[in-house]
Amino acid sequence: MVQSIVRNAVRGGSTADPDVLSAQYALRYFASYLVRPKGQRLNIPQGMQQISKALSDRLACDVLELNAPVWRVSPPEEGCYGLEVEMPSNGITTFRASHVVFAIPVPGIAELAPWFPAWKLDAIEKVQTNPTVTLAIVLDSASKANWDDIFLITAADAHFNTVLQTRASADQVPSQRERTHFNCYLSADPETAAPGDDAATTSAWLEAFFRILPDARGRVLGTRLARWPRCFAYPAPGREKVLDQVQAPVDSAHLAGDFTSVTAGSHGALQEDGRAAREMLQASARS
Image 1 (cartoon, helix red, strand yellow):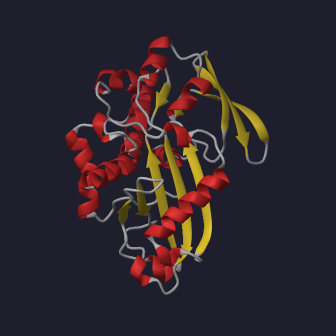
Image 2 (cartoon, one colour):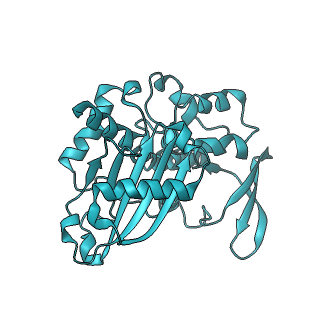
């Protein structure tokens, strides 16, 4: 039972099976749950878009266009890339850019930039990722101060590995906001991460969640199920052998994300804006 608790806690946090992780990396996750450092496991309201925002903060105000989906990136011509961008007010617009930063999940790289050289696409494909399924649950926590101290629950016999209470800030007190957010995680399970009956999965997971937290029944304000066939990268054996190639820019195309970071995961991804910004600034200084 103890082994199952530890293994599920590591899976839920790292997205990887403990058997393919170094002991140091796996135990770092488990120890963080026990120590509960002040800034641990906070919600990232903007998700991986936070990388783009942080890049924008480091560069001049007119360098990046935020909140505009990019549907296509053409290879450079005369030193500039062609981007098909969906602008909030003008629809699909074509832009030319001297630098491009791909701050997107691994599966989207080859789709947006199939013209990348083979060595680059091969290196990216060698980055190990695992499937993950999450169920976000919003509860009415009015008068439920006893939930405030819940941080992590390891679910040894449930449909998921762990239940985590995420917060927008280290000082947030959920019961005072009358809203509590729990996330149920299942990692390294390709079958469940494949497309399926979301309503049935949500119902089954909620019942398992209620067995763990019975007084949550009748207080659910909303849920959101998400399936990722490929989620965060993790430091699998041999990853360091391709990391330099994964990080290396292709001409003036740069990459930033969990898959390019030394430590992987969201904590690694959110440090990659600095490296990408330095690459761009150094390249601009040379030109």
